[in-house]
Every structure is written in structure tokens, then in C-alpha cells.
Image 1 (cartoon, rainbow, N blue to C red):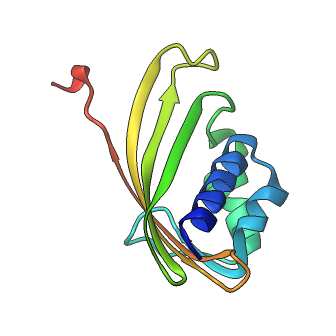
Image 2: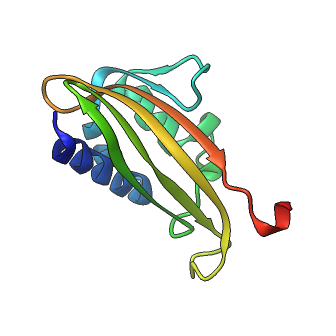
Length: 135
């Protein structure tokens, strides 16, 4: 994997998230992938389980992000062999018009890929960016 390969994977990740296309989600991960929403979490294990967790967070599809109310951009920070660190941001808007930002998160992902470019290990770190209202 090089920076371009990881960027391509990250772009596909954002596209899968913004469309909730189960095939696109599944194509990102290996059969036995481990996905952690937080570093200390027990991982969601396996491609099918990861797709289900994206489509039905905590078993309820109505709790997932409302389409059109978020966007994101991530870039590789470091790539070494099959491992990468990516950084970026996720913007959440008050509604689908995207005229008002509700909150911003700064993200860091620890990624490990297998030989076919699918992710076998994903760990997310994020922090809500302070807003003027937080002061």
C-alpha cells in the first residue's frame, strides 16, 4: 500500500458512508476484519457484521446518520507496508441543506490492510472540535 492506495480506500470509505450502500461498505473490509468505533471497544468482527453495524447501529437503522446531513474528508498521514494512519474531519449539519454546521469532529484512523487492499483492522479515534458556543 502507498499513499495513493490509502487515499483511494479513504475516498471509497466516505462514499460508502454517505450512500449506505451495503456492497460498497462490504468491499472495504476483509472477511475477518475487526472494526473498532473507539480504541478500547471490543471489535465488530467480520465483513457481514461490519456492514450490519453501519446499516443498523445498535440494531436500529433509524439511529444511523441522516443522509445529506454529514460529510467528511480523510487523508493518509503515514503509510508503512500494510499499515496506515489517516487523519481528517467529519462535518455534521443541522439538515440536508448543509447551510449550518451542527458539529465537527477531528478524526484519526489506524488501518491495517491485507494483500488485496481490503482493510483487516480499523480503529477510530475522534474528538469533537470545540465551537464558539462551547466557550
